[in-house]
Image 1: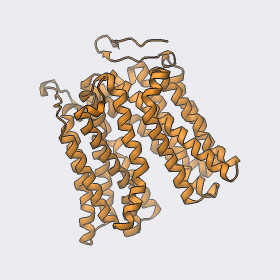
Image 2 (image 1 turned 90 degrees about the vertical axis):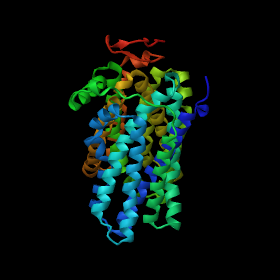
Image 3 (image 1 turned 135 degrees about the vertical axis):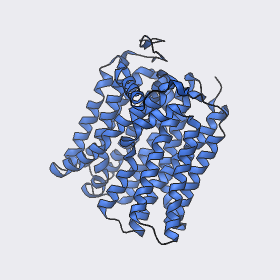
Image 4 (image 1 turned 45 degrees about the vertical axis):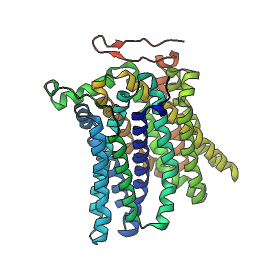
Amino acid sequence: MTSLWRHRDFRQLWAAETASHVGTQVVGVVLPVVAVALLGATPWQMGVLTALETAAFLLVALPAGAWVDRWRRQRVLVRADTVRALALATVPVAHLLDVLTLGQLYAVAAVVGTATVFFDVAYQSYLPQIVDRAQLTDGNGKLEISRAVAQVAGPGLTGVLLRVLAAPLLVVVTAVGYLLSAFFVGRIGHVDVVPDRADRRPLRTEIREGLAFVVTHPLLRRIVACTSTGNLFSAISGTLLVLYVLRTLGLSESTLGLVLSAGAAGGLLGAVTAARVARWVGEGRTIPVSAVAFGVFAAGTPLAATLDGAAQVVVLVAGGVGLSWAVVVYNVVQVSFRQRLCPPRLLGRMNASVRFVVFGTMPLGGLLGGVLGTAVGVVPALWVAVAGQLLAALPVVASPLLRMRDLPDALDETAGEPVSPATPG
């Protein structure tokens, strides 16, 4: 099979994704810096800013999926990048005119977050249209590599650039990154087919169809249950991690940076090895095995509290690498499965429905982390998160996935059964 690196359209999509991910990582650092350094934002105001960046997944993900299925996905990607670039460009202009306010930053965060929802739904729905179904796992693995590299390099690159550029100017650099992403997407030669307008139904009906596809498919609903529950408890530990490392363990900020970088490196390792793991273990089995591994490696975080000195750091780093590796392997395999399984006309709605459910639990997890950390203490709350992450694997462990080597390739929409039955083994 020809390498995807020789596939021109895939290379353009990969380059666009890389530029987009780097831009997103930089935005995640530079907007809070602008808020604190230039506008004196309080902790509460910072919380509002963070919430606005992610609220769009709850508010617009479902209709976004239906709209993406109605439109040319290439155009959606280009326009989403353009909107993000233009919204960010208003920040340095307002700063130059001395009219920048927190209200404007809130608006920019909301607009960028909304455009990101459309971009993410469209690109996950676009990949199956430009590569063969047999190449989806490899393609998603390569796209995850760009995400992992951005997570590793993005914050560090932002720190370096902040030494030589004022934060508002760095926002300009980020806007240029999104324009680069739009440029690469525009170079993709594949022309995706848009359903005939006469076939369109009311928006609510189309949204309901996407949700029904996710909820009624026996394997897909178990994967979504596992992912959403895992995200809930992962958000608990994520909320408490900085407090735990700096205050409970008394480690330095540089050590915290090492722990976070180790997690990103584990994600990169997962992206590189996901396809091999799926071939070795079997696609079906990889999903429950990696879900269990996620909970096992998560135990390294609270376990460090029982140790002293360098052993704490070693366990934190090892746990972070293993946890991120397991998460990325899980994501590459289950996303590829979703893309192969779903009829092309439903891809946008399916991806949006999944994201609505799996990301919708994260704000609740963040609040729960704060409540548990206050009520029972940080370390017990982290152990609750570990237990929850292990329990999250139950829907996929207690399913046919553990007995499957291969996964279905497509769905017969009339019969509702897999066209190519999964191969037990």
